[in-house]
Image 1 (cartoon, rainbow, N blue to C red):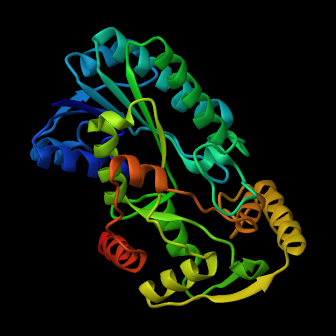
Image 2: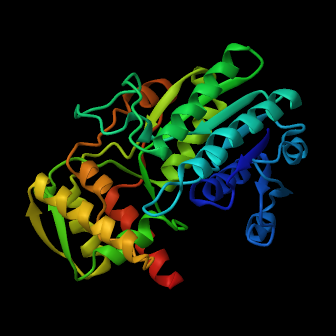
Length: 328
């Protein structure tokens, strides 16, 4: 099978390329920086320089491809990812890639979305039929990209699948892992309302395996799937496990939501006024997220595609932290 992976030098994309090559697929990687992607070339991937914002550069990438795995995205972080940049990459970029895929006769298009499309869901277990409620530019960009995919699907010229992972972690993570590793060790870390709210995690290779299923199973066509590690992890448990793995446990204390939100809002405004470039320990959005459960139902992908999470949280954190510490 001939496959194209966007975001191939990123966390999910790089592991997916490895899985596809091991499976015997012919893998083409859309990259902006060929030097950064050299390790993929040494594994056997074909590198195609291109940019999602430049439609003409996508034609050589999609030509002759059977399945596109669209993993590339810009992630919104505090003080970063203004709305226009996020929409240009995550929405316009997806639109350009969809159009190129249709023109090239691609058979299937697998889109890596996010549970961010559910916003701050108030129910404890969120299924794929939950209303889509953006609570920020990133969630909005993923919702709009999903809408483009469903509109394209109605034309009947392209099979589409949407995968919605929760927080992804593992080796090569340059977003979540560095932030949490800097925020936790040896510091006082506030837990909103005790930190007993659920927050789902998933190890990167489990996401790669889920993508393989969505790209090959006929049952996946036209469907949307949540993907997590299947566990129930409270924020308190995650903080404690990270601290244990780093061998520098943080000092935690419970903070009522109104106090935590007010403090975070003041801290955030002060940081922006100072323009120091240093982000506060926690943002107002982070407090809102910590106050509500983020737990997602994966029974659909388990029943329909046979997805089975393989990496438990404690083992995955050890692998991820070992990689991060060796990198420093």
